Structures are given as structure tokens and as C-alpha cells.
Image 1 (spheres, helix red, strand yellow):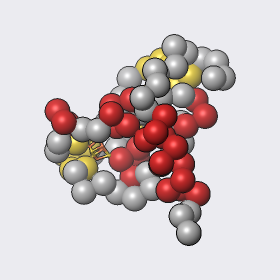
Image 2: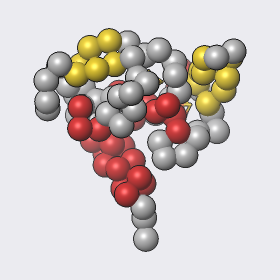
Image 3: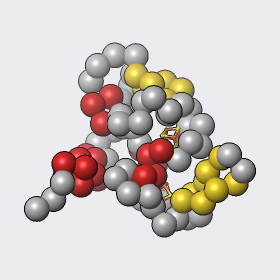
Image 4: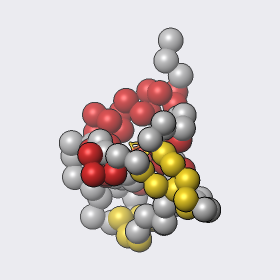
Length: 87
Ligand code: SF4
Ligand code: SF4
């Protein structure tokens, strides 16, 4: 049986074919938190106190679009993106 974390990951992966919310603002601050949803990605590497993706140029669409909508923004406390309105 899949945990809720993995169900949410599947939902985000399927939903990433849809556009990013127009109410999204901000920019990625390389905190790396979304690369640990729900488990740390093996391609996530550290450079000092920042993180980076070692396959950045070919990273999956799901990674490219995170956080796509407010309801999927699970890392809001650390993330450099925010949403002005509810989707
Ligand atoms: S592929 Fe890159 S961007 Fe995607 S979760 Fe892994 S480290 Fe993060
Ligand atoms: S949680 Fe937000 S700021 Fe942190 S790496 Fe992901 S997109 Fe970038």
C-alpha cells in the first residue's frame, strides 16, 4: 500500500503536464527541500550550504515545475516561491 507521501508524488508527477499557476511568485533559493519529497533524490548534491541538481539539464518535468500550484506546495516554509492566491 502506498503512503500518502507517494500518492502525492504520483499526483504531482501526473499533474506536471499542466501549466504553472499564474499566481506563483519568487524564485528557487536552492534549499533542496523539494528534492526530498518524499525521500532524498540521489541526484541532489551539496555545495556549501546550498544544494544543486547533478542532472539539472535533463531533470524531470515534475522537478522543473515545482511548485506548480499552491495546493502542491509542501515546502512553503523554506521555498523561495510563494503564491499570491489560492488555485
Ligand atoms: S532530479 Fe534533480 S531537481 Fe529532481 S528531485 Fe532529483 S535533484 Fe531534485
Ligand atoms: S523547495 Fe523551492 S526553493 Fe527549495 S529547491 Fe525546491 S523549488 Fe527551490
